[in-house]
Figure 1 (tube, helix red, strand yellow):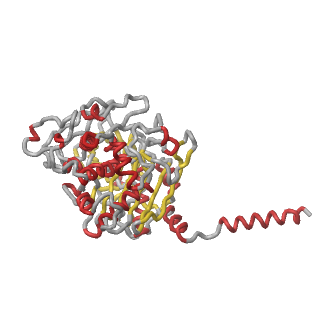
Figure 2 (cartoon, rainbow, N blue to C red):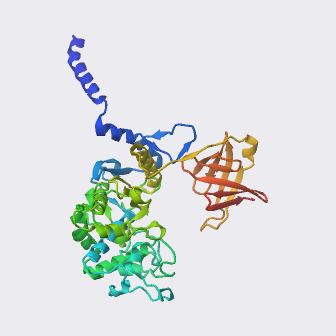
Length: 487
């Protein structure tokens, strides 16, 4: 009787089990393949590439939340959120979760300038001091022949200072844009310290000058101008340059997380440098921006910008930079986009100008860069795109005696504030070298590529050893020199 009574429930359970294990089809199967197809930046010659699961790699890199949008043939193909948005509230990432865009703010804010140009209110090649009112670009001997113009600000060739901005905590005094320009915030004053067009140098400070031009000419804050003149007409209604973020957006906003995956105090930083770093948005709405650029370039846009304007935006200047976006490739393979990094947020936006394909990945963590790279590599391989391509390497085997030559303690060749000696150790571990940073506690495993050249197969970091007096010198990534340490 017991068995007969339980039989209907057993059949019901088996029915659900069969449904849950049914094979995925169509787009679901495609997304599942991509979620399990993340790839490392390096492939070993002759060995099938190892693939990873997105949630496993999120845990590995201590990235609580990720949001992805993929565009194909000019339309949103799929979008999905993963993980935690706010550990305090328990909210999860979905396609409507807002992320700080970091420097992806720049190409979107550049649209404000292009709108003013189309309306005949500014000229890209006019001295910006013509438009600025209560603040001017400081006089400088570097401005004797060429001046600061909007074109030079947009392409990072104006010779202006200040690379980027750290933001302000919730308890910090929030300065005005003019205060930031004058160096009265937490960054130095913004001015010209080299001849315009003498070099390309990334300058968030230059975009803050651009922001001031937009505000002085339009008579509106950048936030208000972007909302009514750009974002809403583009079909990006939840995106905003609100800084500090208005309370109406808080429920949808992701918190920010540090390199250990811990919440940043106050949930996120605020950025008065709105054009450079102040946009809150979603990957899905950024696909709308990408699509408008592609369609307008093809002569099929919605009318906010004309074809000539978008062609100008995507024409390369020094260092392959457009009038807002970064550029790569040419002809049918021309790509545009921008990366973004604020405290606790790391993002990437990449798209083809002529092919209607693109991808936007936003993370709520300082460690998001490595994860984004693996996602991009997997997506590029699946769709046959070249947004990211792995490097193929051919490791060799060295004897224990050869490896022991490099074992020891190394000292960073430069002084580090508050550190007497910045030390790393190198030990032999099987047929590899194990490196440990004694200051930060980080560890790496190096595989030999040549007799004195080694590679971290996971991260792509390179170490080259050169014999010097007292042992070997270690050159890390061709940037940092570590010398033999003599205790």
